[in-house]
Image (tube, rainbow, N blue to C red):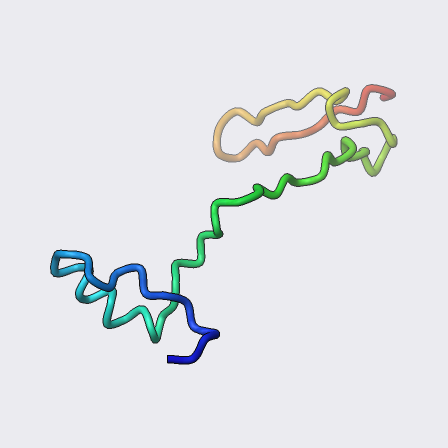
Length: 79
């Protein structure tokens, strides 16, 4: 066994699923869910600005359409 391979965590464990996982582990490798170490945090984003007036969208009023044929609209605070 080459030294660059990971040890099989299913080896010697009881149960049918562990036997299957032990056979598949050399081909599939470990689960791709992370190591449980440091969690990555997303950077804080600045509020996006309106294309029309330049104000943040949090200052705008959203009018929801009533029914299937009326679209929603956004009202700028400067208009």
